[in-house]
Length: 493
Image (cartoon, rainbow, N blue to C red; front, top):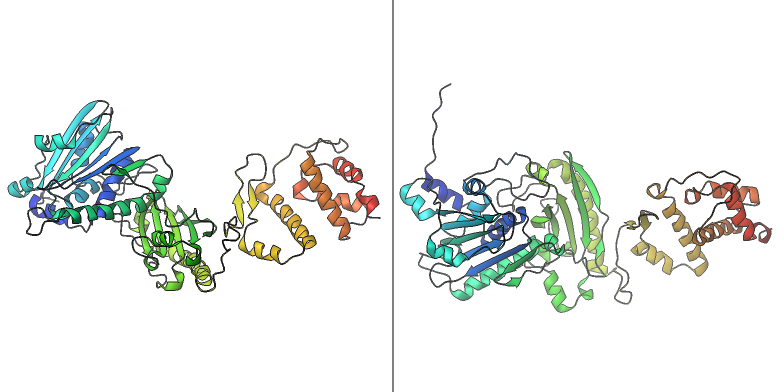
């Protein structure tokens, strides 16, 4: 079959790319992604009003690019979105650098350094429109280069956008006033502290705007003692592992005025409820229930975090700007179930203030029934003794019953399949060395069995103890020695 190779006209395609629908905040966030993909630990974003045409620079200490890498990065559509990417890679289409930059201004200059060697390229859209060709400059205009500055490290990159017609109206009748320009920068700061909060919280990356460090803003208020955390759930959607966890924010009565205002986020409490979708710890989408439920005032405390791996992009239809997304059909029913629980808890707290109050600030009202202990040799999972339901129950029990309930829970914990550790077998007749804490547990359990008349004699008692997963590593001789030493059989008849 015969084919004709056609080359799209440069000028109209460039104009179309400029109108993809970025706003200034999403464009800057997309440019920061490139620095993160280059494993930068220090990212400096600078906005200069410059009286004439303005300038934005993003400087990082990442891995930098060789000339070939830079040429590929400056090509329009430099990646196949279907290609497999590295585990934490944020870029997908190979378009972000260009489309994000062109949505802000008409000239994009990139100066990069890898292992001490500099390379540079420059797109000037005025030139492209004039000649209607994809002509990329191999050098940056001297005046611009001086303002961009040097890269002091062995490797790093500076991205510079000037001729800011879209960002500040350069070349138009209504050019942005300086105060409005810096108000816009303030809004971008708020967007970045939110979108990258999970990355910034790890303290492995620092970001600055005009010299001021960007502090992470956590939409889930995990630091607050009255925040409730739902259990982490792992969903398998089309062979991808998706993590889902809901958070219920504190009732307004538990927050000071500035705290309440900050927690509302830049859209306000009502518009920050809903699903929060992250890819590789970077926020992609937030602020509604994505058609699963309508927004309402009583659900405004509920925020549900969903973590996707980058392999799930096509299922969730992540767009170039990383701000548009669609829920796969397989995910809808399960997210609806999890979200409806979060909304119900939010409503109870919103209307009835059922959260633990400030009189007991030590209660971090986690809704997890189990928590990881972080211990290598003891139980891997421990029961959450601060669970609101358990706290309520213990409040209403007398000391004797509370003691019994706690003992029972201790055995539920030790008997959990994930906590049963294979112990080396010891000959039946040999008495083992046992730590005092475990001896105490045997005595506590055995005396309860005797008091409750579950065991009436030594033989029955030893048989019960041997069936307990908590005492799996202990043989009959050892259990007999411990119970005899405590005089349990004698004292109970």
